[in-house]
Amino acid sequence: MIRKKSSAPSPELPEVNFSEDGEIRYLHLGTEWIQGSMFLDRPFDIELEYVQRMFAWLLFFPPGEVKGAHAMQLGLGAGTITKFCYKKLKMTCTAVELNPGVLHACRGWFRLPPDDERLRVVLADASLEIQKDEWRGTVDALQVDLYDEEAAAPVLDTPDFYRHCRELLTLQGCMTVNLFGRSSSYAESVEKICAAFGEDAVWAFKPTREGNAIVLAQRTASRPSREDMAQSVAALQAQWGWPASLWPKVFKPLVK
Image (cartoon, rainbow, N blue to C red; front, side):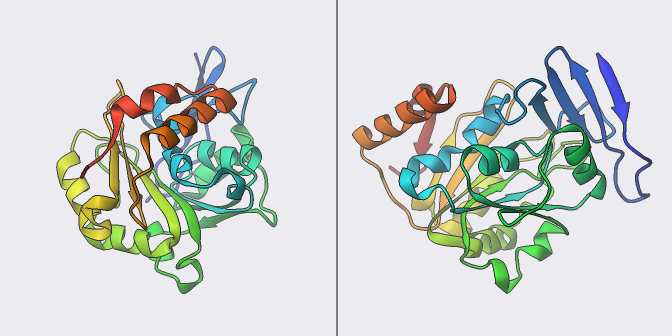
């Protein structure tokens, strides 16, 4: 295994480094906890199962409208979600990241493209950035994966935060959020999400083997038919090679 560190971090922010194990490169924030990953020979594919599940919003979005839609990521990680939205789905992408070292690592080690007319990385506190008027009602897919170097609990996990997230979304927009951590309470987080979105708009996966539980919340609640859902998961599996055919067994609305 190869390890490499970035330049010295600021006093307030953790050191950013990466490791390599075989064909995969991992991002770390000064600890052993994995903050993201990349296939060295396929830098725009998705390696981690929970990250694949962060794209469950595709089950609710018209396929012909994905290209050119607006995806926003809160927490850049190794840039995996942003790169996939930008390169594979051809979306307009905004990523909000607090740590400049993470952005430096993504551009230097994880093949994140430079900003252009479809890609913008904003260095800011996500809790404040998402309250700006310019973003309200503009986001079709909001993907939230905010953890510090200890990965003990979501950094932002309050009713007000989730209410601001809902205000970002278009009418057909969805939020997916990764709930993971030794100090986090899944039930309490889901309760806060429901308070902001309404119980009938919330769906949840069973946790992965690593303990990542992905929750999806819709701006406008809907219930696709079983046939439509089956067609959508089959299309995802065929196009990207993800085990999406298993999703209907582990992905359910909270209120049926």
